[in-house]
Image (cartoon, rainbow, N blue to C red; front, side, top):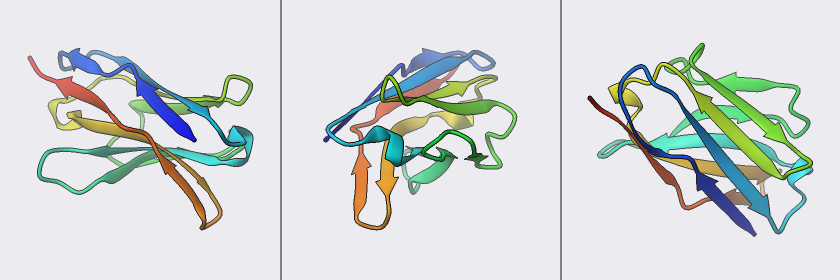
Amino acid sequence: VQLVESGGGLVQPGESLRLSCAASGFTFSRYVMSWYRQAPGKERELVAVITSGGGTTGYADSVKGRFTISRDNAKNTVYLQMNSLKPEDTAVYYCNAQFGVHYDYWGQGTQVTVSS
């Protein structure tokens, strides 16, 4: 099982980034996919979630209206489009795959830094 995040980097406030998470080794289309983030000295928090078919999404209040989660089950990839980035969005972003209570996988994370 592998989840490989990419797309992180250093941007200025107000700019955009698109994160990708490429999955392999499991039946991607059956899994709920999520993006989490962890800032220095803080706990990991849920940012966005998307159901297996992509029909339902959910967001943390802090990113609603700015971030969009999507998935392409044909490509085994989940995305996080991040617009109007703020310094407080600075964190390591992690991809998560979950199916039931027994199957829970994490990626290695990608750093997003928002700074002028």
